[in-house]
Amino acid sequence: MVNNKPNIVYIMSDDHGYQAIGCYGSRINQTPNLDRIAEGGMRLDRCFCTNSICAPSRAVILSGKYSHLNGVKTLADNFDGRQVTFPKLLQGSGYQTAMIGKWHLGHGGMQGSGYQTAMIGKWHLGHGGNFDPTGFDYWSVVPGQGRYIDPEFIDNGTKKTIPGYVTTITTDLSLNWLKGRDPEKPFLLMCHYKAPHGPWEPDPKHADLYADEEIIEPETFYDDYRNRASAAAAARMRIDRDLPKRIPKYVAPEGLSPIDDKKWKYQHFIKDYLRCVASIDENVGRLLDYLEEQGLTDNTIVVYTSDQGFYLGDHGWYDKRFMYEESLRMPLMIRYPREIPA
Image (cartoon, rainbow, N blue to C red):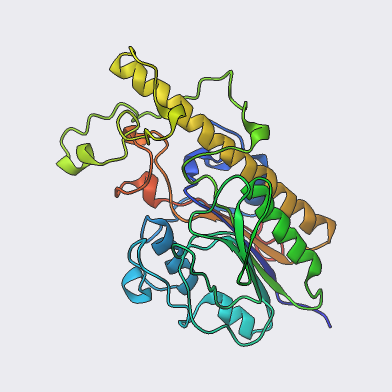
């Protein structure tokens, strides 16, 4: 049987700001493998999420409906898996589907219409331990946010702990599913990385990356929030005040001036964040290499995005819960050689 339908590899990270991607003009890191997607296809510069929080944004992408229609308006809302989603539609058209990684959308209803499906990576479409992704022949997802080191996965309903680093494991599971699929059928693979969501815990092999560098501060790092609503000044995501004190490595030494304290905290935060991004880039390269080795590149749509943007010191903030461009704007690159000129 000749397969004329394009395969789809949908890669989504969590909290990856466009400011930390090479093809978007990053001044603070390099992402050669993510750039391969843009260089071989298209980079979209005006992609915005509809709800800049993890689970609601993921529910919008999955269902194609605004938050008030799909039912996931906050992190506390479960996703009703009985509603129509794009994996179910692909399943009904003969696609094998898989979901691997961060799900975080709670538990849902009925499985799809009997086609093979898979999801691999960070899903983040629910909370706690209730998981039932629908529309997938295969799913293996982390509970809630998941752990960076030795994560637990729920594999088609069975819990198991896998030794290692979560980004690499998510990729391993994705590649295993790709290798075991039916080669005569088109496939949808959703590979969802937990990284670089906080608390930012790098792969040990990247622990010293940027150790001897000083990362450039964003132009708005010293924003004083003048002439704007008081909410901007009150937002609880300031690097100088709100980084989690329960994490010792973000507690600055005593005796620093307020400015030096802020500088110190930024360097420790941003370096860990970029170390997590480095692992994503490395593992995306593994997926792209597999497609090339198997002769699948020309007939496979590869998408890379994040569930929303993120403040990387912009306006003196981290996180995403304020309606400025850095949190609403998403990276989005698409490569499909058959239809999209580079």
